[in-house]
Image (cartoon, rainbow, N blue to C red):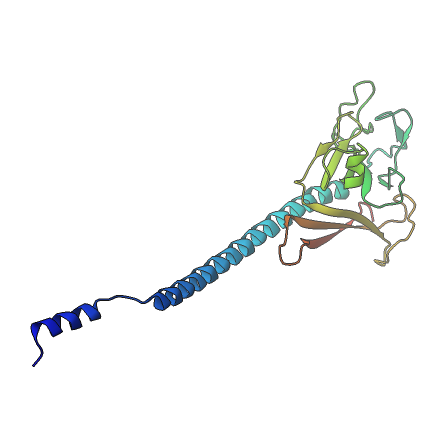
Length: 236
């Protein structure tokens, strides 16, 4: 039979707690579990943020497609057979669609003419007022190079300029546009390499490439997506 002293010593031994090695092992396991949980949470948050940015960028591109398409559908509206107008400048020829208006051989801009606000045979109105908006407009992409050369205000955006009424160009999108391109098709949907004004154009394709605002940490690249819309030209 054990004495009281032996029982006390045995009881104390059972209450000695963890050894140093056990504490180290427990700490390492805890750190691994917490580290994995933090890494997983971070990945989920990054993925969610990219999805939100992609969705916002796509929504911005669809909005741009909608209003660009609206102007394209109205381009060439000419019920009074206007040949030329005096807005934005004297003896301005009426083409309906003016390809590559800045003449840099890059199809990232377009000028659209229409007699629609109101249709009265005076595109843009009469000088000196020229007070009929949306009848002689230019839509263009503001690239980093153009912004650096002070040709536009905000890089990676789509700009809108109402030339007839003399307004300054306005930024119509957030800075999520990576490219804007206009392509011109004939009646058989064949790509036209060098179309001349509106006479030979039956369809206009609008290509918009969007990108996220932040770089993907895994690829070190912007996430990009391209949207395309095809508009039939008025009177074709």
